[in-house]
Length: 240
Image: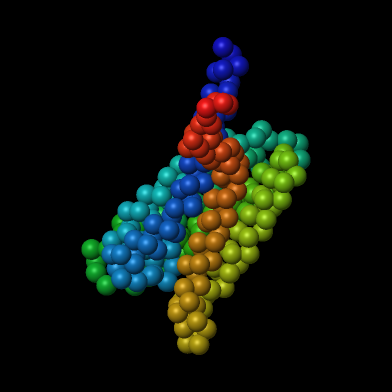
């Protein structure tokens, strides 16, 4: 009985990780597809969807990711660690919620789309809260993947985690650079960033790398294998 109880806890733990991965995987897809269907186009960045009718999807998924990260304890702190996994995921979760509730600098056309934080802090200060939260969020996700997840993983999983961490950090740098040109110009680079939606795709790739790492951490391939086994037709007994 004790072993069965332990197995149930492990499976539940894996499912929490998988849910976190699927949430990250779905966020850019829901926003881009939803934007094409309801708005007739794509926004310049994932954060710009806050100022559209898709605000609830953006805020809802980012808040769910944040709460999952805050609740996730991770491994115990060792003597070599300055911060525990729990501290890192908690900070990343708070930053994710900050990304959701601090709007970016997008110039709204209607006061109906203004958030309470924009009204209380002003658009400029709210946008700094957004960008600061986004940088902290992405940096800590890269740290989790590259350093923490890889530390106790088998070699092939370690390669996945480290690759995801490097991709997240590279895309974070891309987001910072592209966002600067998106906001400040000059006109030529600004047009390239906006016309090719560079900020959005950098953000999307970073979030997808985060999702892949958590799906790997949650043994999603085993869950998919079990589903595939159930879907395959049963073999007929020999001789029939």
